[in-house]
Length: 136
Image 1 (tube, rainbow, N blue to C red):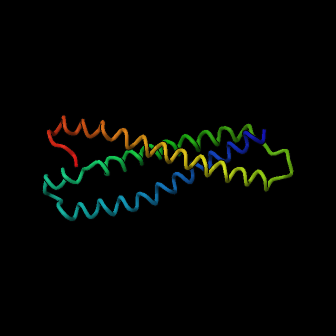
Image 2 (image 1 turned 135 degrees about the vertical axis):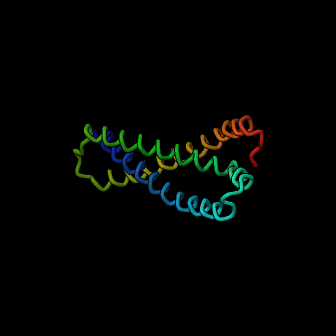
Image 3 (image 1 turned 30 degrees about the vertical axis):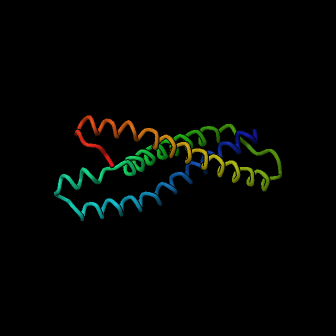
């Protein structure tokens, strides 16, 4: 039962870390959006050029990270019902939770980043079909 408890707490911590990382990434993205709006608010060509692969990748990464965090938190809370600590070595369990949470966060963050990079090509192709312009 301690394995379920460690997994439940690790998933909850992983989801919380992903949300925190996403909040700090959003600050930089919002600053970039504000700069772009000030450059050319009414100019259609500047707005079209401001949408590029990097922006698409950031947006997709944000979506995938939010979904992953939600799944981790939900699954962690669900598994928390079945887990319990029966040993007196709570420091060892806490250390295992920290290590497992760190590894899960790195794996999920890497997978979301890779998925967003591979999926941006689909959105780039759709943009070219719709508007007849390429994204750079």
